Amino acid sequence: MLGLGIRKHFLIGSLFLILGVATWSYANYVIVKLEGSLNSGLTQEELWNLSGSLEWWKILRATTLNPISAVLICIGVIFIVYWLAQIALPITIEWRRQ
Image (cartoon, rainbow, N blue to C red; front, side, top):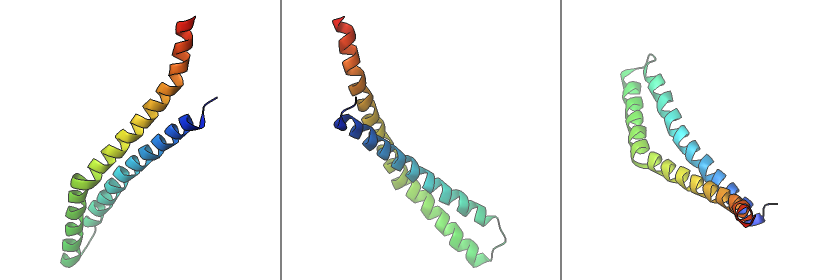
């Protein structure tokens, strides 16, 4: 049976992993949606506003959101690998004793 501390590592890792993927996905979703909006019939002023917004999102994604996503995903993977190691360690010790 897994201890409460071991289960927490999995839950925390999963949470970080989900947050990282969600951050990355949301930025890409907004950019794709703005690029799709630029192809519809717009006035010149609306086109300028949307293209400015699109450039701002692209810069934000490249400078902030992608690095944050990468860090969150890495932290999540580290927690999950640590959780797996805690599960495998007692099994490995038992195999060595036999």
